Length: 325
Image (cartoon, rainbow, N blue to C red):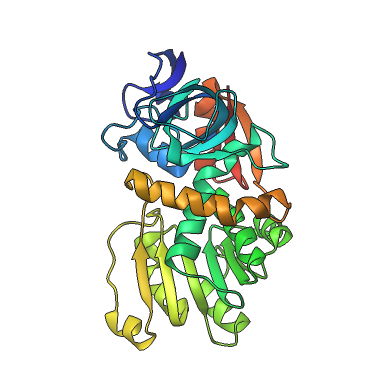
């Protein structure tokens, strides 16, 4: 088969479409004939040499895919050859075939085509596990999403609105904020021109955000704590603004607030399976009903993954970038 390989870390040109051995599904796995994958920030970090796959995972980038089951490994039940699926991966999505633990498979939801389904697994699993399973967002609360126009952000807006929350977003520029508003965002903050802490306080009558979904890490840590409401929960899922910062525990104590930080890729299989099961139960009906939809900016042939990475790094997109086989 063909797959994107990374012989040496570097820029987008380090992504090379090459002949590689076919994967073989092991115990509890299925082999998926890939229709599409999607580009995530983690793929960029892996390409640059900063984010190796977990032990035992495919060395090819790609944390999600859609396609058809080509073979069933030992110990797998409930799935059949030719089933249309999408899947959460620890790696290997940038390829014509990938072996997937059966617990990380989802059926392609009603109303979504096979290629577009590749835009769902990573963002839905990330948002549901952090905003709802960990931070416990409830109806009537306020969620602040940093990077509202990203793949994660566009999904977080829709899911939060679907459960009856108020949604605030930060994004860069009026065009991206307009897209966030179309998806349901209530409070629009241009991080280039406005102080998100001050804007959020004004919009919420001084209360702040009950839950914050943060991709920036260190750069926003102190301001995120300032922006939290009493009993607020800050969920850190990215480190685009650095990994080390000083935390004022007094401010956290005064608000009886909590800070969590999670990653998805290296979690044990049973934890990923539990997240996927929750997504299937709670999110898939919303997708089938048309209340939540994947937002796709553009699709590229998988052999042109380098160009898709350039677009992602330019931050000129809204939603997800797909790679098609």
